[in-house]
Image (cartoon, rainbow over all chains, first blue to last red; front, side, top):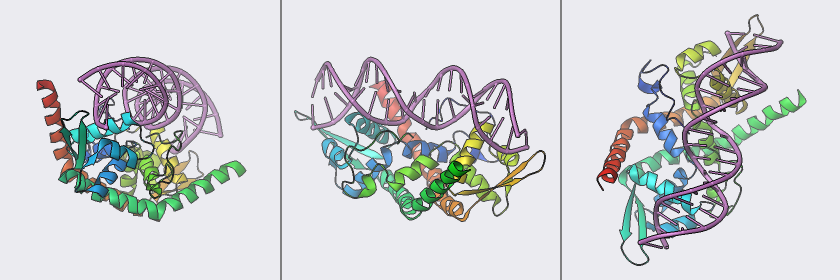
Amino acid sequence: MTTRGSRATGRGVRGDLFDPLCPTRQLLDRIGTKWTSMAVKTLADAAPDEVRFAELRRRMPGVSQKMLSVTLRSLTRDGLVSRRVEPTVPPRVFYRLTGLGLSLETVLAGLRTWAEEHMAEIDHAHQAADQEVDEG
Amino acid sequence: MTTRGSRATGRGVRGDLFDPLCPTRQLLDRIGTKWTSMAVKTLADAAPDEVRFAELRRRMPGVSQKMLSVTLRSLTRDGLVSRRVEPTVPPRVFYRLTGLGLSLETVLAGLRTWAEEHMAEIDHAHQAADQEVDEG
DNA sequence: CGGCATCCCGTACGATACTG
DNA sequence: CAGTATCGTACGGGATGCCG
C-alpha cells in the first residue's frame, strides 16, 4: 500500500478526493492489506459472538501468528474490533467486531459480490491480452 | 499488496473464500494499488467521453507519468479500460471505461461513501489509542 | 506525446525465535 | 496461549532519462 511518506505535489486541487489524505485512499490502504478483509469477514461470520485468537487463526488458513497479531492490533486501534483479555494463565484473548466494524463488513460484502460475479471476466480479458503479446 | 509468491498452506478449506486465488483478494490487489481507484473515478466522471493521457494526468494531481502509464496498462489488460491510439505525429492516446469498468466504479462509489462517512471515526479511534500508549 | 528502461528506497509480509 | 523482536526478501512506486 504505501501512501505515507510521499507528500504533496498537487494538494487539495479539485476537491479533497485527490488529497493524499483522501478518506478513500486511507480506507483502501487498510482493507488492502493482505489479511484485513479476511479477518473482518471471519469475525463478521461469528458475530455477535467473540472469537479467541487461536480459533481465529484456525479459521483463517494461511495466516501466520505474527500477521494475525499485526492485523488484529491494527483493526483494534482503528476501532473496528474490540479486544478482551481474560487474565488467566495462560491468558485467553477474545476479539469481536464493533458496530463500526460491522458497518464496514457490509461494504466489503459488496466488494465480494462484485468480485465473485466479475473477476472471471477480468481474468479472461487479462489472459486474452497476454496471448496477444505472445503472438504479436 | 503482495499476494503472489506465498502459495497455499491451507487450500480450499471452508469454501473458496479462503483460497489464495479468492476473487475478493484478487480484486483488492487491483483496486488497492495507489492510483487505480483514482483513475477509475476520473474516467467515470468523464464517461462516456474519452480522455487523453495528458488530460488524465492533469486531472490526477500527484501521479507520475510512469505510474499513470502502469496503472492504465493494468486496467486495459483487465478489460476495465479501453485504449484508442490515433496514429498521428505525435500520437494521441485516448482512454475510456468499459462497461465492466463502469460497473466496478459503482462498487468503488460505495467504498467512497463509507469512507467519507466513517473514516473520521477511525482516525479518532486511532489517535485515542495512540494517546493511551504514550500515557501508559 | 506517450511510454518504457533503469535505479533506488520504503515497507508489507514471511520465517524464526524468544517472553509472560 | 498470545504476543513481540529480529532478520531477510519481494515488490510498489518515485525520479530520471531515452525512444518512436
